[in-house]
Image: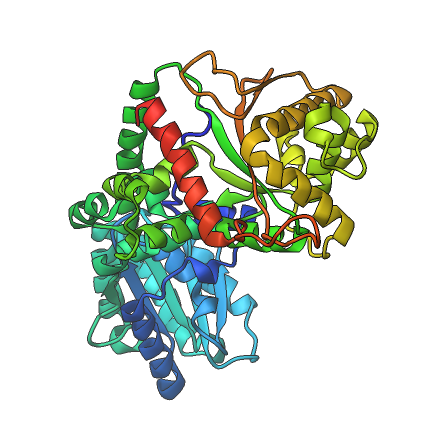
Length: 499
């Protein structure tokens, strides 16, 4: 059941940073500026600039409200400002010495942040000594800074704020806040948007892919006080959705559905597939599919059933690992020439190639490399196909209306022998029912590691003619035609599996 998508959102900055690095995403794509807190810092910086004295401010907020994320990403929102961190292992009594020893005149706008002390308990004596050191520092040139302490312990925050006011009043803190700012975090109205952006950036898909439709998400926003709490509720709800499918499937393995689009022109083939997929693994583009379904003019019979499942479609497409691959004309032809019978090879000018040629040709195809768990990259077939190759493919494609099972058999045999050549243990069956269900894919590949890949070739063409031989026909290689085929084919799997 490895296809079931699982949601894991970064509820703390450290996790966000790790996931962003692993996914090679810039944090600017997933971090939202908190305007109220940013404005507060800007006010404190101006007070330092115009007053000449430093400013100390406690940022009190709930755990998970985003304090660490806000301060760790200050450089994204404050240009021309030096941002410095005071490590948590620096004792409180040494903080001012640490700051003074690292003074520079490079920027008049300097912010220092005391990280990792959210719940530090401070005695009145420690608070007094600390504030007295700050009072002295802030009167010196190296003390023309804003010193921030994000924390969640309200008792410590009130003690420190009152002590700062008693020790130095407006020579340490702002007269209005008295050094205590309430950090509210990201407003609730942004929770859903940020979760969607974060999920897309780090996972490649939106929340709907994890079964989290808007009607499920909105109530979770209202129940959550912080963005971290909201993320936890999203994960819990996603696990609940996943659990229902696990119960439905029990121990039944989930097949992957890969549609292979054959065509006479590799360039056109690549453009069509690229328009309907996302990422290097050729996964079906969920957004394109849902936008097509949401179009009121889309009213075909099979679409009506999909529209009833509108809330499920993203989840089901990923659950079934739906992918779309090119079946290039040279690959198709090599399989037919090497493994086809006399009838299927009859229309061809070149009727025979060796099995080794077919295996070598197939081995370079992205769908076969994906079967072998190889990285395929994003490079497509951008060169135009030679005229004779086009014509040869068109000849077998015209006969496919009555002989597509024979073409599938050729492809299946080529896949079987190519896997054997790579010493990969797998069972390949053509047009045979699966053991665990009533599915009967065109080509079924069952691997030793438990993977089940259902290959569904569809033999298409641009409709080009061959002078004196084959008339011009309808172009069945268009985005619309292939999109329709994918939806119809996947719906069959969805219904058969009882989803």
